[in-house]
Length: 522
Image (tube, rainbow, N blue to C red):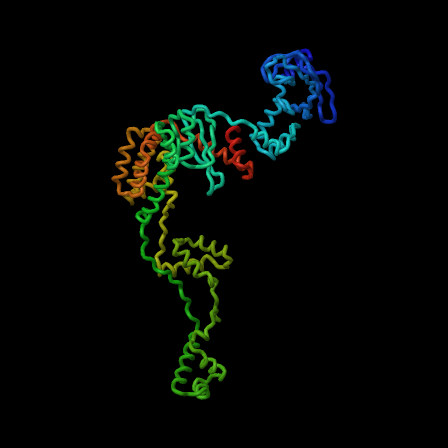
């Protein structure tokens, strides 16, 4: 392979150049070159001219060579225009597929920079361009994006419509997707029926419009393209039914929860009083009986043969409990401070001596398993431990109702069957939800939607009656959504991509730059 052939393979955009010199300066490869063609085409009239007016050198950046920046020193000729009718007297030659007017880089490098800017944005794109030795500042990359022309939407036969947040909770825009080419065709700065209707009037020819259940898009589609078929998205229909089912489950929950039997408060065994405590009670009663008869402290001391200090202590105590310590002088129990915990665990249904002994050990109590067993025997004589029924949460029941029976675990299937046996309304709801799911999966809305809505309207379930009323209000779009193969899944994918672009820009980009990246980055 000759040098010329090698250059043609490795640098195909240089085939129209004659390279005179290649030199390396630091980390920069510099090529001195000139055009091969003897003539050039006038950009004003399109005529060809070979009459040279002058020459000058033009420096153009190119893609890196072995991680080295490449600069092309191009010897450019200026030609006279041969046509007297042309408004240009002279013009500078452009090398096809290499240079463009006022460009300081080659067409190949400009395309690479535009791709980096569209994919990454300003700062991340500038860092990648620096690594690839085609460095360009973040602001220059953003100017490249803004300079790109918007793609022409053309005729869109099937249109997908959805909203996205410009500022969540405050401002929303609308993205329009060509469902056949899978590409965004336009971005509207607002979410309104007027904006969608105006776009449809400006771009006629739409036959099918895929949308969610939002009323503004339904109104805009009706105003802008009254002949188009509106298709309600199946995922949104199923999601609406899921929310309705969750409300229904929450209302029916008390019907399948068995009422627990009336609980008896657990009686904590009372320890038998020691002889010293009993003596204190007797002496307190005798002292206060003599005081009631008018006997003074001296008479009480003589009568009971007690020390005057002891008698005075009993006289000042209003009740025997004031003389009895919380910790009796007698033998202390290792369950002091833990009796209430054991009684509460017993009421919860935990009757295992070993388990309770381990829990007390974890609480720091030094108690034997035999002592715990004795305490539980006293509790068993006073109360009957009850086991709490296991009742699934509302979300768990809703998930079981909305899941195909073949995909439900055996345990969940048994729980749902038991709940349906307890509650007739839940059983009716399960049948209606299953029928709707089958219609949605098989897209048999044309034949079965009317019957399903009638069954829901005649059911005793107000939640499903309200859901059916919502279907009636959007009847044509719902029937089309449950019949045609079109859906808004592709549009939702683009909305997720928009969220990624917004995160890349850290929320600091203006809507015009966001619009460019949505339409041009793929």
